[in-house]
Image (cartoon, rainbow, N blue to C red):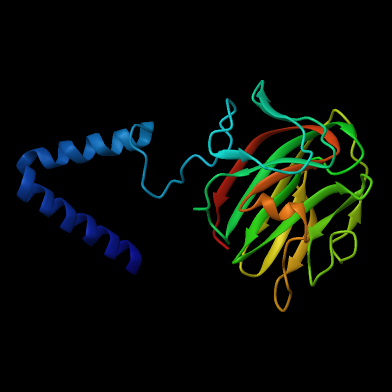
Length: 233
């Protein structure tokens, strides 16, 4: 009841101030604004901006990562196409003004050919970075590299699953100050508390993938719908 009285009082004060500036037109002005908000003509300030990182047309905002022996990267039909390289092929964001915690990063990916990871996602964790690896180490390992110096095949995030070729998979990485969570087709596959853990990238070429990167290893793959949004922890 107290909250309702306070709200009504605030509205009354607001209307009084409007009348001082707009006279009898104040009520009409409020009605127009409310109607505009209801129809979507006015977007409230608290709504979040478009979370898309990939525009579906070209690699604006991205750079092709300079991996030795990397395959070609092209945009076609609203998708990023990775050709098979000698080792790693990938892209990374060309800017670093991004959230470093309290965010979700997602992408859809398809393995066309190959037998290793086809959409490794590198992302910030506070002041450091980690990589979510789907289908690494011969095509079946899913996990985070690296934790306490151990890569995804060696630490407790490792799980094993088979990824079918020519099938789209949805990946989502959620980072807060307390944990890293990773989802595969909305199934939770990594749930890692961060307290007293050392998070870092696996030493080697993947270090070029910061601040946000997507990479494949000796695979032909496709990626689409790459999005980044801030969240409330």
